[in-house]
Image (cartoon, rainbow, N blue to C red; front, side, top):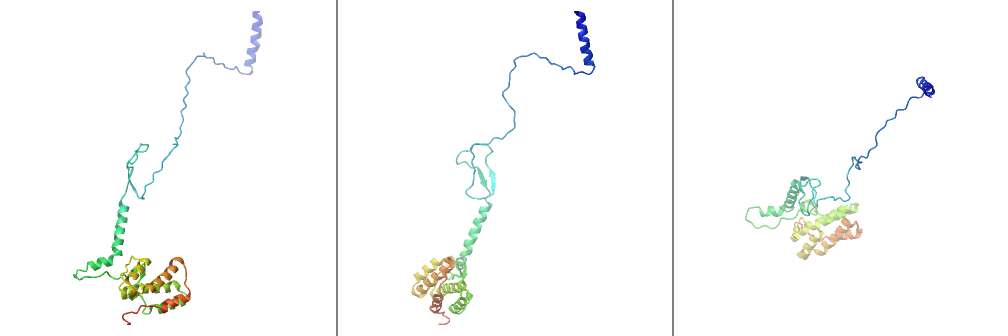
Length: 237
């Protein structure tokens, strides 16, 4: 029996040494119970289910933030202060505009000669020059010539600002430079017949219709306004 085992083992060993398939190593270990971790390490980002966007009621450059990221805040708490330089500049610009708009009043009060003076006559009303030296001697004639040349806005504008100039100069209507069409008409009505309120109301309506609504009057209406021009210059009287 021993001889047979030797004879069987020798061919197998010879076959392995002769280039046959290699031996397969086998690792053996003892099985034992160990604890298992249920955690996983990973990199990610948190996204909030609810968020709030804060917007100030006024625009401006942020000067200071009075809270930290993630810090709880209470209702009414001061969170941000804005640089007040822009607001100060706007206030200064508004004050300068008011002073410039009412410069005629300030100049009249600051004359220093001790004489009582009325308000200075308006020179620019609604962006239009109304001082007598800026108008032609024959306002209705010049306006009708412009109308016949097709310059309709310029023609009606000349009639309207000429009417404003004449009621200031001839009827002493105290039209202010900040007045609107409605303000001018109200002041003319309060002055009475010396300011020719009916004519002034007619030219105001036609001028406003063209300037704001684009309604161009007929030739006969404009011709009638030019023919019925009621203002006679004191220098021509």
